[in-house]
Length: 297
Image (spheres, rainbow, N blue to C red):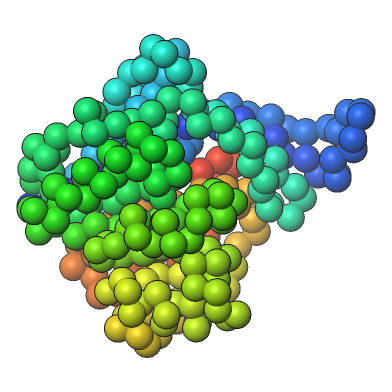
């Protein structure tokens, strides 16, 4: 077994980069692009870009964008397993990116979080060495049920599972305790610093990482331009710096980190080497517009 299966959101991103502050009730000049995105899909694409293991993606998409997303994933080296949904529109995110490359999302989950247990089969795990779940799945009832079923299948097959908590805003709406209960048994957790602090109530990322690593065997906390830290068994085991780059859009940096980290583990890297690979991918991600790696396919 050598493959990575990602289950998660496939999204149409409308990225609006504005160099001046938004001005209410009038126009603000911006550069606007329509791009394929989604935390799960982005992570899958970066994993395919970063390693030699085959990568597959299971997700639910609106029928209008299904072919477009299928082609984009194949160009990125990912095998799409997309379920068309004729009853919901495509998941769409409006990403407002300011001059500092920081982004703010307006999110319409559309078909993405309508994935359900009926869309899952344990046979999808055949040949897979790891299962990665986008945290967005846990924020709606049908997709949470699908994620739990996938986790159960992976547990039976003794396949390790990883989760990216995905969103401070949605975590607050769901509730920290409900999220932590849902992801019980996960091997790898990929929170950013804000998510780690929210999940633990700690004041510092290092303390949050060590706290989380008492519940999850491996925790990799991303720190933006400061890199990442890895905690295992209640202690920080690695601190990795991020390459210095000139950022243009921070969308997808955490997805890139997770995808590259998992690809490195599949290739035999230790956790520090995997974190370094994740930081390199995250740094590259912020130098391009949108959440996907550039492709030449």
